Image (cartoon, rainbow, N blue to C red; front, side, top):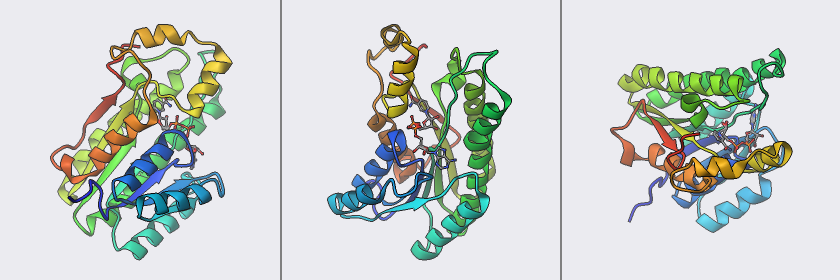
Length: 252
Ligand SMILES: NC(=O)c1ccc[n+]([C@@H]2O[C@H](COP(=O)([O-])OP(=O)(O)OC[C@H]3O[C@@H](n4cnc5c(N)ncnc54)[C@H](O)[C@@H]3O)[C@@H](O)[C@H]2O)c1
């Protein structure tokens, strides 16, 4: 039986850790040719070799900052030249400053918008141009449940994710005639390195938060990876412009 992402050329940003790493691994397990991208030099060298062996596919690490338009362009063009196509782009890389009003400063807000929104729009533009040549492609953006539900300490961060919701819906309409689908996944609270750091630092009442999750548990990176794999695959070929909440039915 054909695998979900067999021979699909997939670019995943922010793949060195957390959700992005789980997405890259799941895509490899599903038969994809995975370009795992991150700005942390050499962080994925050994892991990508292991994944390639384990899943009998290609997992290729690439190191660049997604805000560097020249490096992004060079990387995407090189992938397209080598593979002859780009099937999926997963815009996962993102940063967060959890700071309440009165504490957040302009530099932090600008950095979040630069990485979480502007770089994403630029990568969509670039990938769409290459995907349009084959009249097919799937782009998945990483939003957040905070975009819809709000969250204290995340006024600026949730605004970047709200922007991603809008970007997703408009890009889906604009790119549909080129055969390109654009969707977003909106994770709830996911157990990643970042989560552990955050809750260890703030001592937030996590038990209370879990009580507000109908399914009664935090999310795993694999929960997000599975949603991304579905949206990247042809099994979702009639789905575009959607924001898929993967949050255990949360009401933060
Ligand atoms: N963890 C959660 O609970 C949660 C919830 C909702 C949404 N999200 C979103 O999911 C995505 C991944 O979250 P995570 O928890 O795995 O984060 P993380 O901080 O653990 O990992 C993010 C990765 O992105 C990379 N990155 C950041 N800026 C980059 C840049 N400019 N260029 C290249 N790489 C860059 C980092 O090096 C890192 O490897 C983010 O967009 C985040 O906003 C996470």
